[in-house]
Image (cartoon, rainbow, N blue to C red; front, side, top):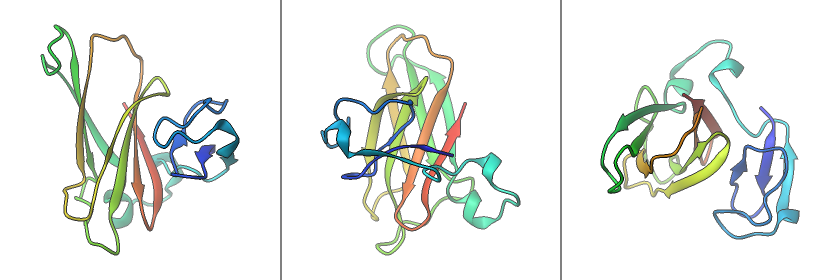
Length: 145
């Protein structure tokens, strides 16, 4: 799946026009370029094997009072139906959350952490939540709900 990618930090922008600055590293829009194979989705995979089962984010959304607002939602992403290994040579280093293709937050990981991330969003209307998992070896994987 094609997308705009920041050449400085690898952030994947899901909209058609580069942002003024990267929401992760602050790089200017000139650092974004269109990559034809920026994202892998479940639709890109002909046969789902162990690699795919360890990289596609599994998203759950729960109504909670997690940020103090009535009606806010907790978005949780576990990377992989089979949990992704977290070793210094192979790990998920970033999980990025989007609502209707708009960046809403990210979590940076180290090999010592589990590849799970949770964020809370206020009482906001949205149609689609997307999560991108960044693997240092196998690239960027996206799931949507």
